[in-house]
Image (tube, rainbow, N blue to C red; front, side):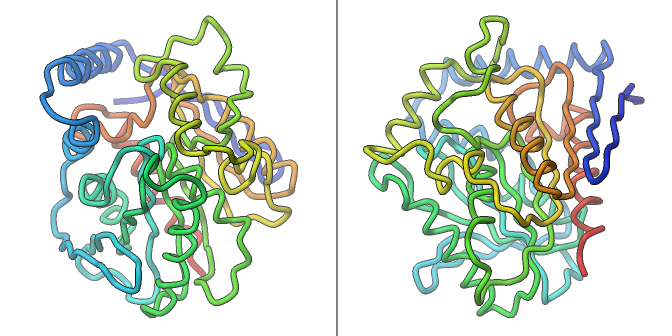
Length: 312
């Protein structure tokens, strides 16, 4: 299926807008209807419901999975056959800091891991409100240091939604003994817990996944009394002067659209290499619908190519 696109290329800033064909709009409507039905009929806790949704992204073929609980770092390795031993993806999952698990995201991470032929460590970080800010950030930084002890010399940071925000927040941390961050790929990252983006407040934004109150409530539960402008929570407000190559993918039907576009613009203004891909008519983290949605497969393919192109 061909996807009409518009490209804008500036020095180190490459922006792509992908239009959605009518036949894929039909698929998208069916997916959203099924998601709504699942939410309405699921019996269980919100965390169980979120894991049930994320677990629907299938585990790719020819991968092995291994649980990790070592030196305070918890998560799952997702290893494709013949993955290089000295490089890895640190995958940080979404869920608005309240939901999500590494186990539930193994399928999602495997889609990137197999396409890039790189092992992915999917991090389990402590969730709010039991573990408020900066617990999730501290866990991500600790995971970077731990990966160095596992022989990983180069890392690619990958994450969706809140996990994408955490990945970008880690760029403000001195590298020290951590692996070299070769590149970053994030999907609909939540970069601004102060919710100052125009898309968040625009009454014309019709987000099929989020209501505004859901986002502001999640931010409040995670932040507690912390400053929402703190770069460890809202990396948009603390973009580092030096950045690794960065890929951001986002759908147009998102309250948090401007969290992606503003971060991309700020990173480009710092002189960073930035690729921003905006997918028309698609929802928050549409990539998880990889079986049904051609754009999800395309997005994963492009993300894997981006990561593979930036290993040294």
